[in-house]
Length: 149
Image (cartoon, rainbow, N blue to C red; front, side):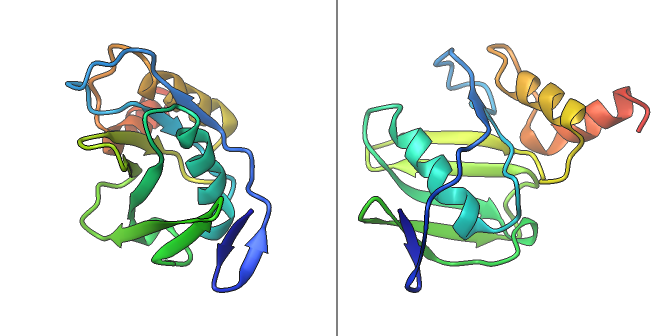
């Protein structure tokens, strides 16, 4: 269960794809495609999925502020509080997750809800590729340009 300001709901199952390689030099670790722009609905499922990777639990998320319809600073997920920061300076389409483990950070391409499925799938494949060196803010525009959209 997740909770914010007394509101509880079951978390959604996230559409997330992560790369296998542990290369920290690459700009992304994978991609996430939320179904809506509501962080209370979307973030708890993602947090729980990332927690399952091991090596600690997610304690903080950083998001691109204009991409979200609401901006709760804290979410309660599985009985613990996760701090959420929303920044206009955060690159478009980038989510950063941090854990309680020192130095752990996961950068995910965040594909906007409503993105056509074929574009979203191409973006998820590219962002999670072991050799992808394209930053989050350029992946979707590159795919759309290649597809003539």
